Length: 207
Image (tube, rainbow, N blue to C red):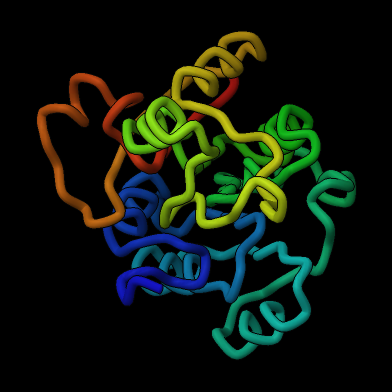
């Protein structure tokens, strides 16, 4: 794995963007938190409080070692045990595509939190399109490393797909950025993010 990636697949560049979207001293929940590295970073840099949510027992043990409060639960079963408006920000990083009912989870994110932050692999990235168009195969990449028959990613989408869903659900897009894992920037990313962005990073709230 790229040495710049943490256990959630986030690069330092991604961490910086998420940090800019999170207010200091706020209350944060990180869904699918892995080893808790994102929350640990936010605790250190923004003095946030909050919880990670994770299913994997090994990752939960690492969260504890990282000094992160963690709750074991299956996100596909919802967030019904959390009170409404309990958090300032709810984060779902590189996990949305593996959820059985992503729409329901997005609704729950804005029930328990004032704003949501979602990151996901952009299926419309040009390299993915080329693999399908020229090779005739489902794309395999650093962002989508699995074969079609063993992938946990069951709801792949594009940046445009997500924006359309937010409009349908009555959510407001506060910020939308497409990035490369390397952190490099370019005119293509700014002008046509749905084509040149490997990872989508979107901050949203209720209208």
